[in-house]
Structure formats: C-alpha cells, structure tokens
Image (cartoon, helix red, strand yellow):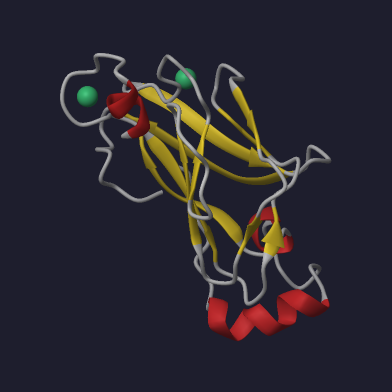
Length: 152
Ligand SMILES: [Ca+2]
Ligand SMILES: [Ca+2]
C-alpha cells in the first residue's frame, strides 16, 4: 500500500515555503519541496543484473519548490538500509533527478549508485529520503499491486 500523499497547491505555496516551513504540514514541504516523484523498481525485462538492467531501475526526485535545493549529504535508502549518499549536487527549481542503481558517470539529471545488485525490491519495499541531519524528507512504499509505472 502506498502512503497517502498530501497534495497541495504548490505554485501558490512555493513563495510561502521560502519564508517559513511552519505553514506547511509535511516534512516534504518543509525540506523545500523535494519529493520522491517516481520509483521504477522493476527493471524492464529479465532481472539479469547487467549494468543496463541495473540502471533501468531508478528513483526519480522532483523539486517542486521555486528555488534550487542542495542535496549534499542527503540519503536515499531502502527498507534494508542500503544507502546512497548524495554528492554535492543541487536540484534546480522544478527539476527532476534520477538515482540509477548501476554504474555510470553522473550528470546533472542522472546519478549512479554504482551497485552490482538491485536495491528496490519488486515485491515490496520502501524508499526513504532523509536530509544529512537524518530528518525525513519523503517516503514511497509499494507492493506487487503497484506497477513500476505508477508514480509515487
Ligand atoms: Ca524485471
Ligand atoms: Ca531493497
């Protein structure tokens, strides 16, 4: 079961978010509007652990706020505490960023965990995004009832 999400009128709140986090009810907004937007947990085709297949498994973040947010030291982890620590990168206002499981050269829009095994279980798992301080920013959970093409 995916977690219930609070949908708010983000364009209207983007300015307010710059002034204070206390107006906003959830940790996601308080963190500046970075969310787990989509998790493609079941790589297309057979899961043969090829680098191509590993990189077709990813988590996509979205910055719904009106300003860039630094992800330095932020952590993306699964239910088994496999952690990916973000390098010194920013996610621009309104931009998306994918964290792919396999190896590759990081770009502005694509980061690589450089793993040789899958992280995001096909049957059931939870992606959790925390700040460097450990405070929770967002989570996304799924089961087999949620296909990979379902957004978080
Ligand atoms: Ca697959
Ligand atoms: Ca996992």
